[in-house]
Image (tube, rainbow, N blue to C red):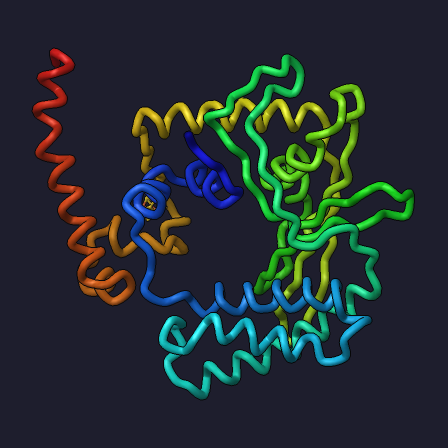
Length: 291
Ligand code: SF4
């Protein structure tokens, strides 16, 4: 059985080797990057503010304390306690600003967890060995009373317009939400990426789109193909400019000092041992395949 979250599916699609390192070998960085931890914090505070902001006056302060207790200094990559504390204050302030920019929102659900096996949207063919699993950030109620599925993104600069037309996670969430609808009612689901842009003066950007049956059929085909490849242990490497932003770069590009610093000695050794095992296994595999 394979369970796909948005990250798991998108990671495999972006680079099979990245997926293998993270999900198959289970190699994780020792410390969470500052960008990632601050993005998660703002994400959490904004969701909390939408859910409870009008009921509890100091809800953001409490949510912030709770968040950072779960992300102690020694698990983050800040170079000093001072910068760690400064980041907490900035995240809290920026979250307040993002909530002001968002204004009052009518949320039907927040952090909605849904899980569902992959089913062909038209034929009903059931693949109970492929599970789709997601946490939908927000389900807002639109002016027409219909739901809008929202994925929040914390970014450093203004994003490329139109990403919402392509984002696979929005198709996945749409699929998860429409579980109980008969196929003839799956016409158009409203979706949006809401960017929380962390510029000096924080900005908000809505990128709205729709999901239709066509997108669900696409998602079905992608999940089937990716699951099939993973079951056959096919992990394509996809090197390119984007390697510069990849967490696994120090492993892939064999930079031992950097790799040990980021992942620890044990994980670096695990990666090297796995590489040697795979290389040594190649002649036997070739013989077995009558090459
Ligand atoms: S560094 Fe490049 S090739 Fe290696 S895992 Fe990352 S994206 Fe893939």
